[in-house]
Amino acid sequence: MINPNQTTLQSRAEQAMPGGVNSPVRAFRSVGGSPIYAKRARGPYLETTDGRKLIDYCMSFGPLILGHAHPSMTEAVQQAVLRGSSYAVTTEAEIEMAELLKQAIPSMERVRMMSSGTEACMTGIRVARGFTGRAKILKFSGCYHGHADCMLVKAGSGVAGIAAASSAGVPEGCTADTLVARYNHLEDVDALLAEHAADLAAIVVEPVAANAGLILPEPGFLEGLRERTSNIGALLIFDEVINGFRFTFGGYQDVVGIKPDLTCLGKVIGGGLPVGALGGRAEVMERLAPLGDVYQGGTLSGNPVSVAAGLAGLRWLQTNQPYPELESNTRYLVEGIRALAERHGVSLQVPTLGSLFAVFFTASPIRDFDDVLASQTDRFAPLFHQLLARGIYLPPSAFEVGFLSIAHTRDLLDTTLTAWDQALQALGETPS
Ligand SMILES: *Cc1c(COP(=O)(O)O)cnc(C)c1O
Image: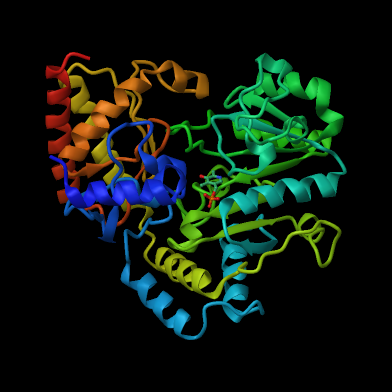
């Protein structure tokens, strides 16, 4: 059924914005079909312009751990904006935010607020290079660190691994100093270090990889990165833009007891408003201007409305500590999905941690990005659409992670599992 309103929006969007969107995944290219258009959202529900009320498991790709339009957040935002939307003068709220982050994540001895996770990662790399006087950066395939030029790379060919740009418009010079290893493979790291240790400024990693579905760190992997970077005088950067305040009130670094030199945050700490933060060892962070020689700045950095939303959300999380419940609810959903997959004879891996989960069509556990690519990613789109038709909205790509919020109650999870049962049934009846 073609909804005229929907068709109009799509053609207007496509005439006015590249691909009709302001960020590519929203265009539904990897699942096909028409993208959805949001009208409003509350709690676990996303309402579309064509009148559907979806149970949302995308949750804006991570910021909304309290659900959409949580009252603590909307009230804080309303009050903040009435006092002015931007001053470009430091506020007490920014100081409080930095103090709260320092307290929650002790490795963040100094904090700088910014407007996106991309900015936090880009600045983390710049300050690591400035501090060490070295150029090379090592990252892991399948990890995403925003869209700064030097991070837009394809996996290297083997461990020889000087990476090629994964996007047009990125000159060779921008990626010439980016090395790529497989996540969970310390032997790749060692092979790269054998050649590049003296030139390496930093290793950057998502402690829990959550931008290629979900890949959990094997015991010893993150510890091994800490040990190796310390030994060679390089910095360890934990990109906790998704991980931060997702698994615990703090970073995943606190769960595993590893202190990185720098930490990148975003998403949850802005409560759904634009935000990023970089923090870390004082002597590294104090290389940033105005104290040091590494430049970084931003007209809207530490924006009072973003900071108000972020602080309100963080205070709520600190007071209410919803993490055990988020985890047990997510486990309930995931175990339900696994049982249904088995009943319908579908080989599915559903890795989970905290309130994150991902779906891979394969019988083998996922250890790195090669395993993700080896899974049947083409089977995700039909599943996505079967679920969407039943009011369940997963992130619209096989490479994104699913998110639960505190608003996803057991009742909703049961409704969701009923939809999964019907979706898997329907998929079984259509020849693939
Ligand atoms: C989302 C994300 C980023 C980029 O953050 P933006 O706010 O989208 O710029 C960086 N790193 C990780 C791990 C992310 O998930």
